[in-house]
Length: 398
Ligand code: ATP
Ligand code: MG
Image 1 (cartoon, protein in one colour):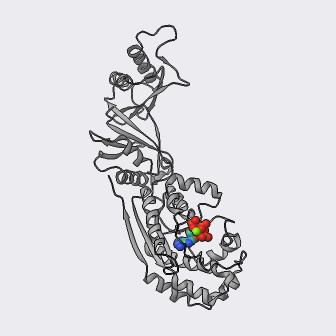
Image 2 (cartoon, protein in one colour):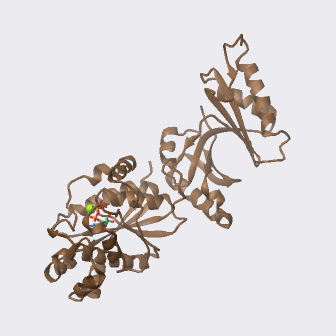
Image 3 (tube, helix red, strand yellow):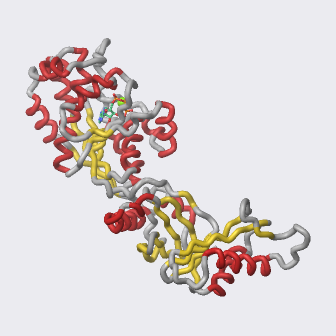
């Protein structure tokens, strides 16, 4: 079947009042970025929907795959259009149904243009009758094609909207969420482990454009941790189409902490430095929050006490999208979005070395601050920021 259009429906963004236009425009922009360049003529907003006008030859599967990564889409459908007249609609319904195999069908009309002379129900009936007449001429005693409103083999959807009449057979589920970018930017601390990529994904899903930040401890650890982070960013880039990854050397800071402070507080101190550096970069990038892959109780540093002490190092809100998830759920999600296989590649994380035997699980802020007095905090941060490197990832379209 050669389809003319893709009709895209969004869920929540319809509810956002005055922001609606902004949301829709972002969604259009993201759809354009996601689609193979040679597949569409136009992408535009029409009442309550986004319409993709397709070129002659399109690879349906490729487009499907692309749109499944565009947050904000509730569902989309490859459709045909026809003049907004009941006779034309009837014929078009037969045209798209005639090669399909089914015993029962239903017509389901949505009419956004209320001055169309027929109600949705009337359209259903008229088109249904016509399809029956054309496709089931020999219907006898319960055999052959019939209408089934409850559990049909196939549904022909009709949408009457603005100047268009669209017909389609399959609603393809989108990923939901909000278009990336509508919620602003956040800095995501990306370790290369399993959790932080999933946390970044959930940020993206709620419309946050992610700027990635990875800390390296070369030569304590191999240089490959950056390569791994890059690979993960490339995977997550499919949800935001253009990404920036900062890699920041953490070695000097780590050395200082190792040499000068109490062993049991190391991890808490590392994290406080990471957060501070992230905050400096957030200001530069006009990002409004930090994101981490922390989840309560997973490791010693992630007790409520330690989380609390770590986050007083910064003013920005720290989002932890995995807070309610079990490790098993996180792994499942990581596999689904495609980051898992890369996350489990061997590469040492900067903080795994020199871990104390008995890390503090209930750090007190006073004690932590006292330890920090032994360090030149501002200077260490300034130096680390100076050495920050940026890697850009842009969509490579087919
Ligand atoms: P992950 O699976 O994301 O590595 P984790 O369960 O191993 O998380 P921790 O090692 O305690 O947890 O790290 C907590 C969070 O701190 C990470 O989810 C990540 O957001 C951040 N983080 C840890 N190491 C780094 C790093 N090298 N670079 C950037 N962020 C990091
Ligand atoms: Mg980790």
